[in-house]
Length: 323
Image (cartoon, rainbow, N blue to C red; front, side, top):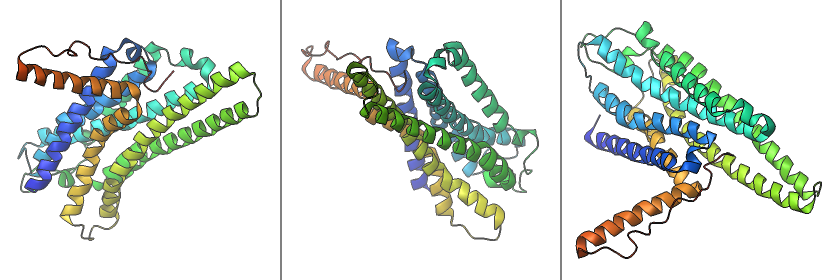
């Protein structure tokens, strides 16, 4: 990997770590957000994206240059980490889609189906399944180290595993389910809006339903944007893997391969940006953080306490997408 690509990938890792740490901190420090079941799943997704920046990208950079050499088990473990945390992001998005589906189409069963205990069990199941899927190459589905003894992803992880198992079964199938769920959600919200417009409920209920419908539409749209960027970032890499499997003699430029790899890493830094742009609680938290930094800078420069340094606006109790 060239020095320019390495720098860009390292910047992506730093943004991913900082952004997802910020998301987790906002949720955990705000009691209202912390008590919202939807945010359990968002924290799980943020943790997976944080680990991509903190673990996966450094491992990818090491293996890109062939390290560790002559240590096949450590090499396989590092490569499996790349697969594991990526899969955790996919299942995290799938869990969020299921949660939104139940919230909007089965509201009267929501608190029974997605109690805090059931939600934590679902998150634990997603992580356990991600770990098992990621460790499949370590169980035997891999190539031996090449004669050079270098730990290179494409030399050790088989294209058959990446295309037939990792892409088609573990990524494409969940994505199809998510697209169907979000499609059903949008249709239901449109039905609710039409019902309100037709005046099938009284005036006070009409206003309440309109507010709920708008909130749910914004929630579903925000999460669908996250799903869209996931597809946009990961699909090019899997398309290249499929081409390499079906056409081993095809010449794929190294720069194109590196670009798709870094694009897949960039997805972990995009989600926090979507949260900040579309969720008021995160925007308020970011403004408060910037105000604190500016106030600290003013204090350091003047040696006196700024008038507003103790007046940092608190987080609004706006629910992060959810009920």
